[in-house]
Image (cartoon, rainbow, N blue to C red):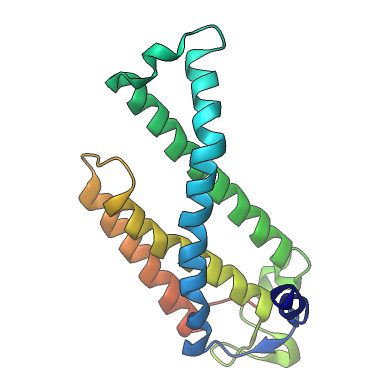
Length: 179
């Protein structure tokens, strides 16, 4: 109950400057994603994959062949990515929809009270979007090494995840965030 009370007491419209201390929440988001993925993989994606790939009438005996296991794993990875990107898009739209710069790009670099980049404060809810995204990409580095199927483009994919994580962190610290 204490967590819910603290969450409800957060002033999401509150504005402050980006700070290194904001990244204290990053480990929470980094642990959130593998936990959710594990639960979805185990209790939902596996069952949906078997139903869609094999249909209702097939017997349980054929599930463990190598080709079918690969298809199930590919489905679970794709379903997870679909869930994450859909949730990230919905969160980003929810946070940014009422902002003046959402429909008028002249406001991208000017904040309230005519704050001009780089001296812009950002809202707590936009900070949450940054932490959500950074948490996913930090988790993705771990998942690529230990969880997902190793593919021929592993090096390219790993460099993409590391570069994306670094760009998210640097854009936050350098205040390339839109208010």
